[in-house]
Structure formats: C-alpha cells, structure tokens
Image (cartoon, rainbow, N blue to C red; front, side, top):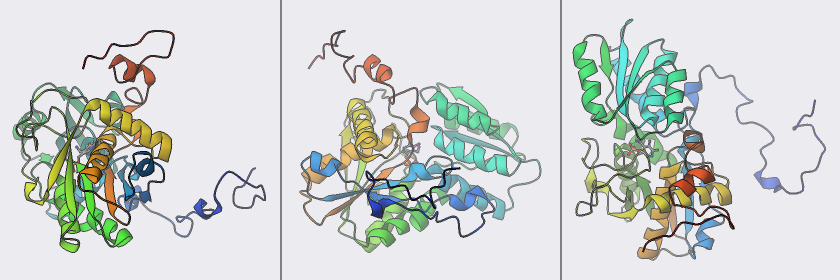
Length: 353
Ligand code: PMP
C-alpha cells in the first residue's frame, strides 16, 4: 500500500516546511475523542489581507477543527463536566438544550458518550446538516418558530429531577472555558494581539476570550461581528431576519459581557457568505457562514483602526463547511438567494440599489 511516511515520491507543489509527515498523535494512545476538544490551530492568512489591501497580519482561530465541528465543543464538555462534578448527573439523567445547533451537537456528543438521552431545541432556520448530526448522535431534535429557550425550559420544568439544562445562555462556565482555554491558546501562540474579532451568539466566546486577551493586551481592540438585522449590539439598527446562523439576535444573553467589546461591525448575509467562500477557496480553511461574518468584520475594522505592518488580528472561525453543505457552499443556494449571479449566458438577477 502507498505509505506517505516512507514514500520517496516527490510532491513538488507542496512546500516542504508545511508538511507534517509525523502525526502529532502517533506518539501516544488516546482514550477519548474528548481529549481533542480545544487546542485548535491558529493559522496565518496568506492571501486575504493582501487581496483586500491590508498590510497587517490576520490569524484564524480554527474552531471548526474541534471534534464535533465547532467552538461549542469546549462549552458543552465544560458544562457537562461541571454538572457531573456538582453531582447533577445521575443514572437516568436526560439533557435538554436550546441552541442554534452547534451547542446541541456538543451536548448530544457528550450525552452519547455518557449513554444519556438528549433533547435539543432549535429554531427552524438552522441547517438540516446540524439537525442530522444531532440526530445521529442520538438526540431528539425539537424544531420551533418560538423561543428555543422557552421550549427547553418547559421540557425541563415538566421533569425537573430528571432533566438537566446546561443552559449556555446563563451558565457562567460558558465564558469561563473560553477565558481559561481559547483566550490562553491565542496568547500563548502570539504573545501580542492588537485586534480580536468574533461573532456573538451566546456571547461566551467574546466575553471569555476577549477578557483574557484584554488582561494581557489592554490596548487590544475587541470587535463583534454583528449580522445586519441583529440588534444585539447595533441597538439603533432595523431588526429583521437574516440567514447567517449562530450569531446575532434581539436580546442580550446573560453570559454576554458587553463591557469587553470596544466596537462592532454590521455585516450583511451577502458579505458573510461571499467572504466564507473566499476564506475556503483562498486559504483552504473550510469554515462556516459566521466565520465569513467575522472575517468581513475584521477587514472593515482593520481599515477603520488603521492597522498596519506588525499589527496582529485574530479572527475566530466558529464552525465549518460540514454544517452548510446544502446551503452557502452550493452555487445554486447562493444564486437562489441573489448572492451570486447564475452562470453567464443564462440569466442574471437585477440588483436594486
Ligand atoms: N458561530 C456559530 C456558527 C455558532 O454556532 C455560534 C454559537 N451559537 C457562534 C458563532 C457564537 O459563539 P458564542 O455563543 O460563543 O457567542
């Protein structure tokens, strides 16, 4: 069989220093996939800053490389361990969680490993890819047009002794794990950070990692990427539905600490999805839609704050392409939503100014 490690075959198109012939995992046996939550790669962007006329450095924190596919693996594991150590988890415990999908995947993941049942409540706009992933992990998924949190509470209140709601929107473990891990990993890799950019759904990432980075780098500017239509930060903006998943909203979650945020950038769905596709195509980082929102916000903020050579921006890529294989990843979906013209010689959409 073709063996990469022993092969004498030359691969002229790949740079030698970017090849890791020896797997970092080969040295030790791993007992659980949960050992691979966190410690995600921080990767320098090689083309996008230049292509957008920027001379600063942009680094992507690739949270989609977590085993369940998103940054939410960190909080689901931390909240489950906290509940376990607080003796809230018994033999017949069931979990319930309101989520845009990724925390649901994380909770279902942990529930599956603990042989527990999980109920995941999510809004109808969230992708069927996320729903399918939760279902194969054994979760019962409840899709609603109403508040997922309210429905999840009803499920918990109907059986309070049995059902545990880890509750990402109110559980302080959410920002704490980003303070203890995500923020630390970024600082250990870079030392100095001039700008930190991410979206806010529960607000756990920006509150936790943002605080940790600000403690070490007080001059670092913390930027939230706000989808157009969301009024979480853009309080005077017009509230309307938007397609990007996992971020934004009209209420401020309890775990979101707005005091750490210096500024926000409003990004349209079109900008988000086109940028996610650009990050995938130019940098090979197979990210999701809200990663595009964050990257577009970073580019705007870099200009606004005049970041130049030697300045370092960290952008969080919270989840990956897998969650959107039937959505922005396809040309047809982009065309149907008027984000891209159909191929030449067929037809094109008239875009009203
Ligand atoms: N992007 C995606 C795709 C998400 O699922 C989430 C979490 N809902 C976020 C960004 C925002 O992360 P946080 O909840 O930590 O604010």
